[in-house]
Image (cartoon, rainbow, N blue to C red):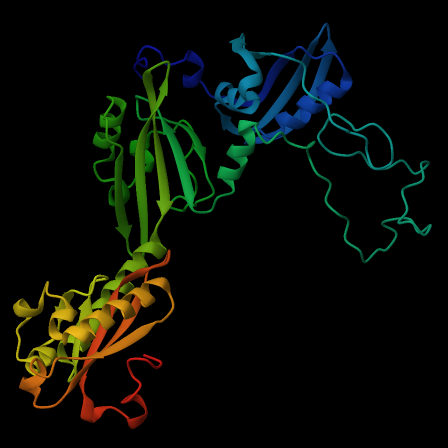
Length: 411
């Protein structure tokens, strides 16, 4: 494996596994060491944390790992802005903080001091337990499940580890950090991997070994473009059977240099299904619109014709080209044109959902009878009107109850 490009920290290329010694300073009290113990449990893959020594302002921990971990990167994420330095010497990670850890109330439920394992010790049989207020000891009911005990003290919301935990719990996203050699250096997110057995890719694995062709065809070229400093983020959608995923590649920078690539994989299967359903429904409505026996059309918010169907063309004796771009008001008598503008304004304000107007008898002459246009508002998600659906009918087809009051009544 060739050396990484200049500017990539040496620690990013090494993975830790097994039991890893970590020395943290400054740490002066057992309570501060306990706080660190609880924080170290938040490193992903941690299976054990043991305080080995607390002396001379330093706390030494042995951290057991269940899988390989980019420890230097995880420590930087864990301590965030509190971290002054993090270096590895002879297999030992030495961490210097800007100040001792902030301690919280770590008293156990029985009033004893909390141990340094991130879990409460079993209550001593010689120490009476708490009661529920009426003298009945809590937990004496054998049928009542034992409430789980939190592993850690209250978290600081500004701690980057909180964001990492939230990302790991997100079932819709998977994030991979990839270095210049196409080696995966970190994996986060709760989305099952969209390949193979849906297991997340192993840290330290080559991207070429874990990315299948159907999902990442041409991925190496795209990642290389990002690593070379491509100005435009690489975003594309891939599909495999009923599943669809959106992949976004963006650079990871430090000190003005690109040190890696962040690949964000999102499950967009539902979005793809919605688009397909919308396309199918659009095709259905297109047929219904084109073949409808009554005149139909679409108006823009300003009342100009956008579309019209063949039945409307026959009814008015006008083609699609003669109607498109012209205003509905052009087909009305002058007095009714002013009224139509007022009705549209009321619809825009939300005072009415629909309105109706009679066409100028000269315009309706082709039909041989009176023609009434019924317009229903299409509401925009944020309010206002996106347009109007129009139906044109002959007045002799209208029910009697709609004939005299249709302009001023419910329409």
